[in-house]
Image (cartoon, rainbow, N blue to C red; front, top):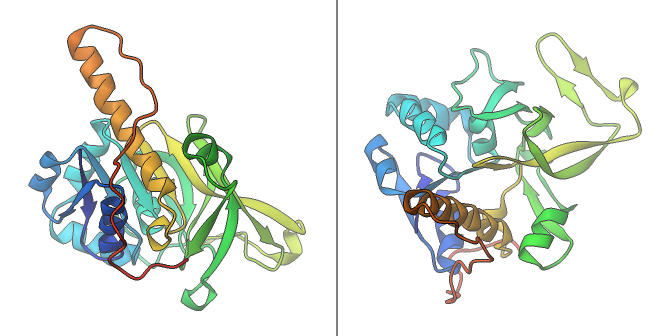
Length: 255
């Protein structure tokens, strides 16, 4: 299995290194035709406006939208979450183009500016049930977005509790601030809809590869489902290992 990582800007090298630790090949994607060579795609974190401008310059948006429609797995982290959302608020003047496909509204930079970036343990029951390990995951939030609402087909995988001194929602017409907020509210930071996975935080900046392993199994299920359909036989989809050789990290990572 070959995983493409959109390599216009942001943490694409870190994703490729995380895949390598699982024994999986990741290749950098910068041209539309390269998407034809991969079975799944990661859209990394970075500066979403810059990434959108570069994607527009290279005429990548039509190919990215078509890739999403094929049913192949796509995972967006941080800025990648914004890319995949059908709707976005809190954008810079003029907005930015989106790939879409994920039925949700996302707030760009929901958690604030660069200096308000943080790390926190978040509860990940589904990830733990599928991949084992601790019941929490150390989320790295860097100028992070958050999901404000989801459609009926979107599965919420993780929340993060926001204290009342945070801005809960902001747009050009509406702003809900501390005086309107409950003492604490849970905001959505990880979702899944069919072949699309999205996280507001950066799993590629940690030593914990469970999100990458989970995404790889999404790809395995798609491949086995396609194989079953083409052969006309029923195939049992079990737990599939994504690689036995654990390579040593070759980049600095946050513990």
